[in-house]
Length: 293
View 1 (spheres, rainbow, N blue to C red):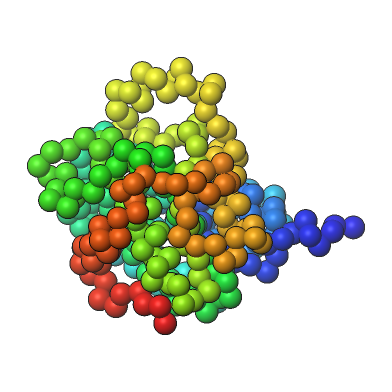
View 2: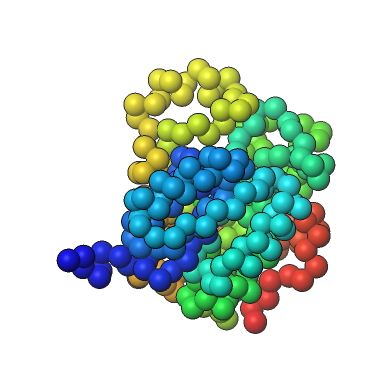
């Protein structure tokens, strides 16, 4: 007979963005096996349905499927509407989707793709789902950052890389933005039961960056592969943050290897975090800011 404590996420609903491959899929799989009711997003319906079928087979539970390209703000808004119609509660939002592009790409909204997908998408989606999260007791927002945040700098004068673009610089900036966003969100949600934490998954062997790889990726990834984590190992910290009972009230922290650690000095700049929040809200047309109510 199955012991009840082996399904610690039973009765909880978790939304994982980018849940069709890599760390996102491994995160969803781990939580499905813990009994969670899963919802995943992906860009391609066929791949997303296939991933959902695998999750249902592994966890034996419900898996909701949402298809959206999160680099587009109208798609993020449509996704949020569909999620709110479909899910009566959201106990955990895992902002997992992300990407790396060596050359500068512009989204449908005229924004640089790395910043749009890696930062603005989770910023907008989280805000649009915030009321539902607040109504779900002890909800959690888990945002996948990277140790690249330590090399990041928010260039407020050239956020979109219009004057000067480097794939690495854009990526590092977006990952620092993830941490600044998390800390600012935690401050704004102090009077609620919603927590917000960020994490570094480790250097994981996935298809990440494969659409437009840089020279370093092309040269070194084949040699580094034996030393990289498998997606399941990379998902361990996301799963821990989503499910660990002792983290129910811990908020505004950065984790690596399932343990809290200090993030970069720049990530604790509260003035920069508040400024980034306002700039982001303007860029996505968010009129009602998140409050502590």
